[in-house]
Structures are given as structure tokens and as C-alpha cells.
Amino acid sequence: LDCRNKMRFAHAAAALTLFCGLGATASAFAITNVGHKDYSVGTGDRNVAQRNSVIGGNNHNGHAVAFLSRKGLATRGGELEESKMSSLSAASLSTNESTSVVSEENLSLLSERGRAALENLIQHDAAEGAQRHVYADWPEAGVDDEGKLRITEQLADLDASYPGGLPNYLSKAKMLLRESADGVNPFSDFTAVVPEGEHISYDSPVPDSHTGMTFAQAEEAGLTGIADVAFVLVAGGLGERLGYSGIKLSLETNLCTNKCYLEVYAKYILAMQRMASLKTGRNDIRIPLVIMTSGDTDPLTRKLLEDNDNFGFEDGQIQIVCQDKVAALKDGNAGLSLGKDRWDIETKPHGHGDVHHLLYREGHVDKWEKEGRNHVIFLQDTNALVINSVLPTLGVSIAKGFHMNSICIPRLAGEAAGAIARLEHKTDPEKSLVINVEYNQLDPLLRSQGDCRGDVPDSATGYSPFPGNANNLVIEMGAYAKTLRGEDQGVVVEFVNPKYKDDTRTDFKKPTRLECMMQDIPKLFQKELGSEANIGFTMFDRWFTFSPAKVSLFDTFPLVFDINQRITGENSRSYFINV
Image (tube, rainbow, N blue to C red; front, side, top):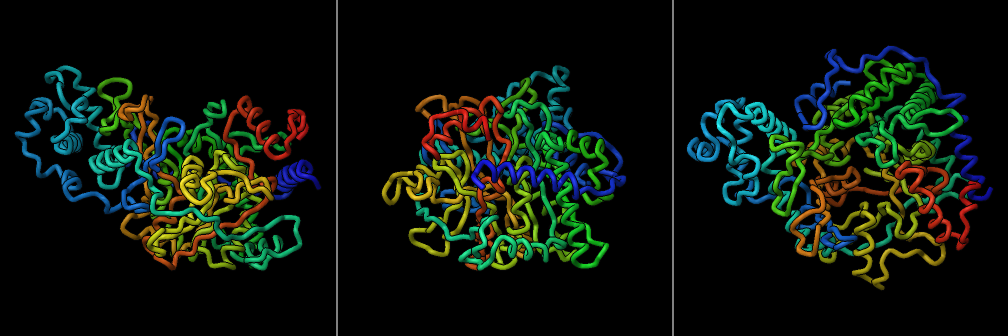
């Protein structure tokens, strides 16, 4: 089969399999055990989220990315100076110090938690005044009292939802923004090397040289462990970039069955559950699914489940965790960005890296470990073809004893997708690790080493020599649980990615925030497991496992035209029209 027919075959086979054989009897499912359906949207209220959760330094395109911290690939916990951390307690703040900025009459309007959060912020900001636009020059009591209550409750929410509180967030943000402005290179101590990994082709009868397994053998090995897994679906984003106003999970995956992404994933998990029951003779196997939502997607995700009888899952089999938003920052001093008025703080998504801390915080990892589950499988919200590679990747993980195994595909040089690389530390081999490097970091890193050619294709294959990260993960439960119980509790390394207005690198084109990515968990593995951390990847053909919905249809045509030219040298758009 040529590439086009392979793709047709893969899509048709996936659609036919899902349409014909993977259904399950729908059953009633109470999404929440607490009975209410109110949702918190926009402020990052940790209490509401918990209540509803039952169920480097390089310049690129005018912006720069900085990672916490100056110590290289360090973790988020325990990196700040004691002087900065001391600002977390409001207990040491004198009444005179707070009332000199906000009158006692105004302070008396606030709730206990709102007042404590405001005093925390004032104390933290005493030396620099970067947040005075938030707390200074309040009108007298009786004027805008509702707004004063609103902003202080929001401060309390932001304080409660971030480990270490809002002052900790602002201290980290200021440090990262300073590193970004100074051009600090987070990879200066590392050299990127093409990693060794597993390569499995669906239609090749030749065993992989590393695992000694064919696709069929890897898939069979995966079947032996599928009964003891848990699935996690990261679904915090809307489809706005695709020109779609709803959640991405509700998008149709194909025109044959019209099944949405959530239904495809649900039917696949239930099919694996049935296969595990047939293989073991047990009727009590239930594979759990946790969906991570955000304030933007949580209500619509719950409604999608309710409207479709939960796609056949039983009561309690699906759980939802809702991630909190973080404060947006307006300038290089980490000043809080105001939203719709002076009594509203703008918030932004923190990134899918929150999923690890949420799974720990909500007790799911403890529960799974007690149930004897051996692996956690992480899926992205819009890549339906990835289900083709879940079983063989699990099989490789079992055979190789991987603590983390990333599903990969051949990557086009310069493609806006992360790459798996082995970062070798220049002086301390114990700090070397296999990890994802984002595309806007890879090219500058490669230009600073070796032949200095950057992110260029291999002359023999036409692809980048670095595997492309599809960002779907298989993680071993024991190592995962131990890592999450460490100092950082699953809070992965953060970065900041401001878009600067000009070369002074002080003002932003739009507010920024700290972000984190779930694929950065190897840094925590390294911290907690040391040299015993076993991180790998398994690469499959692109046509077989990679079809993410990332851009709108209108924006797709120039992209595929460019890809066609780079792969085939053909200057023709009709090739893609016929695919």
C-alpha cells in the first residue's frame, strides 16, 4: 500500500471497528455524588473545583521562553529563596501596615479569607509596588463595595489554588520573566542527542531491534496488561483555534460514523475492557477514565456525557477533575493583569501539566495503586488514531520496564511539534535525561552545538532525526505514585512565554502567565528516582497513529501544501485534494 491508501485503510479500519464491534450497553451514570450542577468558570476556585471533581532563553519570533529555574532542569518546589517564601504568611503583617494602604473601613467589608489574601499580597509587594494597581487608591467604604469583595475573593481563590499561594506564584513569575528578558538559556548545560528508542511498524514482519518484538507481539503483550490500567483524558481546551465554538471532545472524528472524540475514546476503552474480560475470564474488570477539564470546558463536558448516557460507562467509572486557572501578568515585574474592570483579575489556563498534581490531590493515584493498577495511559483530546498504538505501546512498556513511554511519530524538521531528545549534561551524567523539547527550543539548541545547522531533516529519510512527540503517554504506576508523593506532589516545572512589544523586553503585546506541560514529568522522575528512572519512547508510522486536530480547515491548506513540497518536491495542491 502507498501512503495514501495506508491512510485510507487506517481510517476505514478504525471507523469500521468502532462502528461494528466496540459498543456497550448504556447505563445510568450519576456524574457527581453531591447532586449539584453549579460550575465555576473563570476564577480558578479551588474549592469549587474540588467540590465538582467527584465524577530558553532564546529569542524566537519576537518572544522568549524561560524555564524555572537557573539551576537548569530543576523542579518547581523548593527553588525560591527563603526571603521570598517568607511573604506567604499574613500572620506577620501588622494591622498598621495594611491599613496604611487600605482603610480599616474597607478591610472590615471583606471576608476573613479575602482580607487574609489581600494582606498577603500587600506584604509581598511592599518593597516593589508592582501590584499597587490592585490594592491602592480604593474609594471609601460605601463606594464599589461589591467590587472590593469580588476582587479579594478572587485573590483568595488564586491563593488557595496554587501550591505555596499567590505570592509564591508571583515570585516565580518575576524570576522567570527576568531570565526571559536577560536571554538566559535553560539548556546551556546540556547537549541534545538523538535518543535510542523503539520503532514498531504496523505492516512490518521484522521485529524491532531493541524490543525484539513485532507489532503483533507488542500488541499481544499489551493485552496482558490492559485490565490493570487507568486512562486519563486531557481536555481543558475549547475549539476556538479550529473555528469551532464548542469543546474539542464534541467534534466529529469522521464522516462515516459521525462519532465525536469522546465517544471514540469511550468505546475504545470499553472494548479493551471486554477484551480483558474475555482473556482473563473475569467479569469484574472495570477500566476507569479520568477527564481533566477546565473552567471553560467543564460544564459542556459534563453535558456531553449526560446527553449520551455516558457512552456506556457504569456509575462511577468516569471521574472529572477540573483544573484551576492562574493569574495573568501584564509586565516584566509580574504585575497582575486586570480584566473587565479594576475589580477583576484576568486569569489564563496554566497548561495540561496540572494533570499530575490534580490526580494526586484528588486521590486517584492512591486509589488506583490500592486497586493493583499497573499503568496510567494519558490521551490528548483530538487525536483519534492514537488508539491504534495504545496496546503495542503498553506492551513495549511492560517488556522494557519503562517508567514512562511516549508515543512518537517521524517528525518533519521545523514542524510545530515537540521532539524527544536525550539531553546530556555537560558535566554531570546523573542529570542527563530523555525528555520532550518544544519545537521553538529545539532549533536554537541545535544551532548552538555540533554543526550548528539547527532543526534540519536527515538526508536519508527526509524527516528530523529527533522523534516527534504525539504527547500520549504510558506511565508505570509504582514509579508514578512514588514521584507524586515527593516534594513537588506532581507539580511540574513551569515556563513563561511572553510576546514582547519591542527590544526593551519589558512590556508585552498581551498578558502572559506561567505555564506547564504534562510531558515534563520526567524531570520529577529524575528528581525522585535518580538514575533508576527509565524513560523511553515508541515510534509508529505517522499515517497509523497521528491525526490531531490543531488548526482550522482554512489554515490547513497552506500547511499541507508546504509539507507536500518538503517531502515529495511536488509543487501541486491536487495531491492533497485527492488524499
